[in-house]
Image (cartoon, rainbow, N blue to C red; front, side):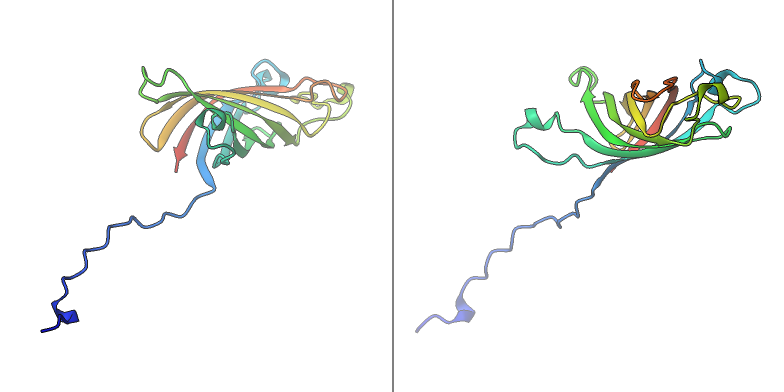
Length: 191
């Protein structure tokens, strides 16, 4: 008697494949605060708030190399801004952030250093030094350069805290180059 389809053994179950997760272009968001340049007119004159509120978005690191060594040098594109609550200089910035894990074996990949370099546009004083309004730094021009660094600690897989320092100046490309140097902290959420 010939075999029929009904007599054939059932096919093996298909292997489980996890659903494809959509790729996010956002890597991390951060919010925090800083003290506006404590050694300058914007940070030491009485009667003005010295507090800044800061937020930034770090985008996913583009894949430029299959080699993990070279890929470690690829930064994350970053956009952010800072609002001064006392009406002093506020600004928005765009640039790149590099992250380096510090002693990954010792600290179980929790401690990291960040470095940022990019450009900043601001609403601070760019006019003649002799006419600088009370409580403002003479910044010379806008846009300027921004450099920043952070020492961070990963509390969990998603949450981290950071101590930060940032400096903005025109690098001598414009007249008057007082710049701003701010100190603060942030919390971050990694997706």
